[in-house]
Length: 431
Ligand SMILES: *Cc1c(COP(=O)(O)O)cnc(C)c1O
Image 1 (tube, rainbow, N blue to C red):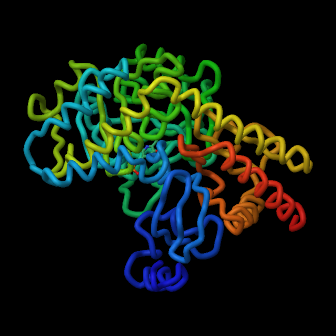
Image 2 (image 1 turned 90 degrees about the vertical axis):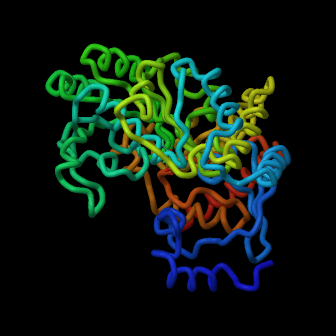
């Protein structure tokens, strides 16, 4: 156990780190209260510095699909570390991980490793702009693609607005090149493409949205993005940083049968270490330096520890029946959450694709950012704290995905559902 409590650590952290954290959502601003500091994790559980055990549905925001400290991942990292933590020169593990990814994603013949999802999407956009010679990009409101300047933009009220920066420090010139449309809104999408299509370098999308809570693509959404992009000579980027190897072996492009031009990856492919990647067909990837004119580099890119963790993770995921197991345990959780709410007459929507899900306090299905924002954030905060008290660690925001891992057992789910019933009672008592 740490000699300092979470409250003491958070107090000190706020003097040393902005907001006391190294990534904003960890600070509990969305739900109030003091963040829990953790000292260890094992399987589906994490232990706080106070020694309290929590069932974890954050999974480090997606990477830990095998759970915490999976023995094969830990062994791979240990072995790699003993051989050298970084060379700044080519090493075999980079080829080994690239072989696995290129062999499983139909649209990816070559890829470049980077160190985060943010770097992957930022570089993919540069590639799209370099290749097409066009400046504008189109994204969907509520889709998060990391924090690079041109992607820190969402719609104002109403669709097809010109980009307005989401953050101080993003120049208006940069933001003005980012067009935004509501997710699942094909009518607006098509009219923007009609008007601006010839100037648009790429359309970037989360093929299953997970960063406004889980919002699946509507029936023909991805198909229409594909055909409109082809028609106007814009590249289609699937940002699979969250969905890659999460919603299926290979990701959303396999699950929905759509072939993007560029794919971005992160999270699961790093097995809990900092990794991102972007990949495409050979012609497009030929534009990347040193062979082509689009510059992109990284001191620690393809890091041997990160490659080892990624390889070990993908090798476990490749075993037969793995995704069926993940699907079954995730369905058990989602169905139980919905049934528990129904039993108490509380309007809740549980939206799930594979092992990512969100419980919205909403009486209607959430299809876009506007819908997500109409869900009851106060109810979620009460619910979150009631779950936390009972030892269930959920994302500290109403607009995030919960992640189920292969380490979650039926007993874990049943314990979660028992806590859920208690938490919902508290929510309705407070209302
Ligand atoms: C997490 C995420 C990113 C950013 O990845 P980082 O590693 O946090 O920079 C980009 N796109 C999507 C879809 C994500 O979920």
